Image 1 (spheres, rainbow, N blue to C red):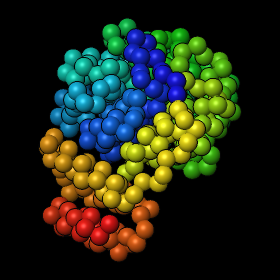
Image 2: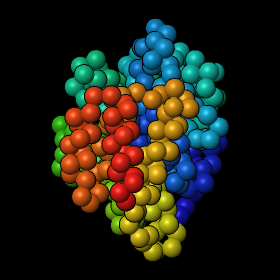
Image 3: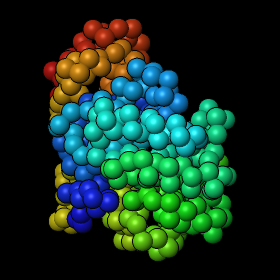
Image 4: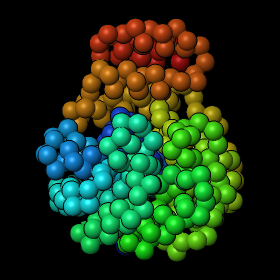
Length: 320
């Protein structure tokens, strides 16, 4: 497995955890780092909210030594506000890098002219990257989606590179596709061929074989794993081991997956992030695909408080 270098930051591998809203909080990032993620990103954070000093948004960058290296991903459309929020978060949390989101397909984000909505404004994208690059003394990355036309996609990628980004992540789906359909590896391969900065491939990477295929076919410098890591931080260990040895690790036992869940809940308690909604989602995610847990998952869905969910999960632990 190759190492990935982004600006002055040299990683110990090339497997990256995608920033995911409502998912990649500190406890989940710590578990992914433990199991082999080379770099993790915070949840997408609104630059406008940080400028307004929204505590909830600012705390998305909360970090600790155990998860380093980590990056904070920002969303916004006003260059000066993006720079101001990046400088503030850099001083507060000392992340190893800052990332700008040009790929989120959520309608609420697009309506505000952010995320993948910015792909229609390549000049503004260039201004955003230049402003941030001039303002920061840490590496700067960007994440984009592809457009339906390859040349237009490559044009945006080159603008990002020329404006000062140290790496770019390419999700091989269009805004219209959302998370449906297939990720276009040909587009990603073409963008990699057209740039000199590192390119990280994203989309349809869900196991050892797909990881190898994407890396070999596109020639990318790294891969970013998103949905496949939800409730399954061990995926980084599986992929890392396969890329190093060519061998597939045995399936994760139910007891081992539950141990990850309980470690997650303990981390949430330690960092004051233990909430009902988050716990309920993660109980569902960590039990997904387990055998003979249909009724357990129904009971989790019906549970109305933290104690009930923990009782269900402790009961499941005693059965495996």
